[in-house]
Amino acid sequence: MGGPFWARKDEAAWSMPKGEHGPDEAPFEAARREFAEELGSPAPDVHYVELGSVRASGKTVTAWAGAADFAADSIVSGTFEMEWPPRSGRTQSFPEIDRAQWFGLDEAAVKLVKGQRPFLQRLSDLLAQEPGR
Image (cartoon, rainbow, N blue to C red):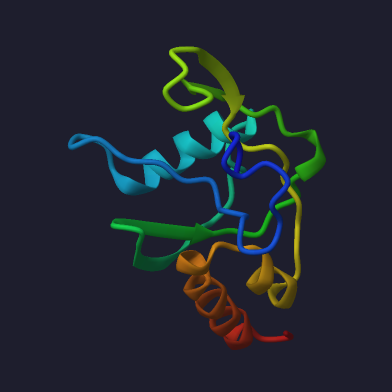
């Protein structure tokens, strides 16, 4: 994740691209929009499977997975503004994400924020059901 709170953190500090959807926006379409906003390129045009939802930090997160070639090192993150340092009256701009990287499931279980880790088991279960895996 980007911004000053997550700078120089690694374990349990990574997140999937995510965001909120409006009342007239389908969750899957919001996920595709957030992917593009956070990574700087559209979500790959592939088949996606829903990994369900988890409740974490007071929010419900729904995730999808799809198989595609995507160069994680070519991201161009969007930015957001916030008051920093706190109570300073100064507004600064920060990247929504500071980097992207691919991980195997075991390493992802260490890197991903705890609230999103159930998605890894769900993905692993789906992959185990595929012939030839």
